[in-house]
Image 1 (spheres, rainbow, N blue to C red):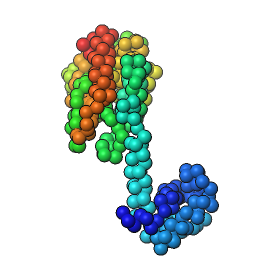
Image 2: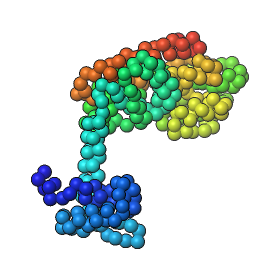
Image 3: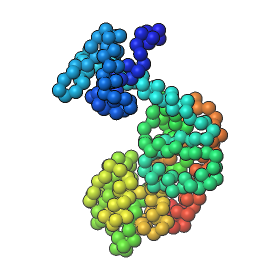
Length: 305
């Protein structure tokens, strides 16, 4: 790394920002300095490296063809540095960072965070709502909650809840239903990203291969639930996404059975993750919360009993 002493770090930051953002103004705004300061840093870095990094055009600062790979590596490097700073600033004892699929975060977890804070006031939660599994060495995430089959290379998985699905709709829509086959006459709300489809449930009630009349298709399950609540059709929903609405009568599950999809909710941690008291506290708390919620759900929607 001796060659790093030949180039100023501030100059490399300026070069990376200009290359990523495409203009001196945008780079200056991000770095909190003047346009002139960024320009001077870029010029000085080009002189130190002995090569032109950008072409100055009417469209802005365009990376020179020979500098594209260099700029990409600089961006990767500064991302790693940013992650290192985040790790250094973290308080391992007081902040728990959890990565959760957005729909689970919005429809189930967020409403229960106050209960966790009351039980463990010494632990602050930082919720990262996404469903990616980033390389564990490049992130400060302590715990992930994912839906899948429990096999993610480089990670350990601990089952929380087997996923089961049933059709749900508004009470008024359910009034016209006498038998499972009647659901075929209702419009369906389709989750375009679901890991299962209607055939799974229809086969369980002897209607395999039946035609599905789709009204709307969404790329986000939370939107599907909102559409079902609005009376736009029937959704094939699982326990955690529809629990609140089923327990409070906004939706009903007119027919069972609740069919297992083969997927489940899992705690996911890095294979080499060290034992953490705050992680274990959260896992125990969440398991109890889900168990309690499923008991209440079974009373409100017997198909889940």
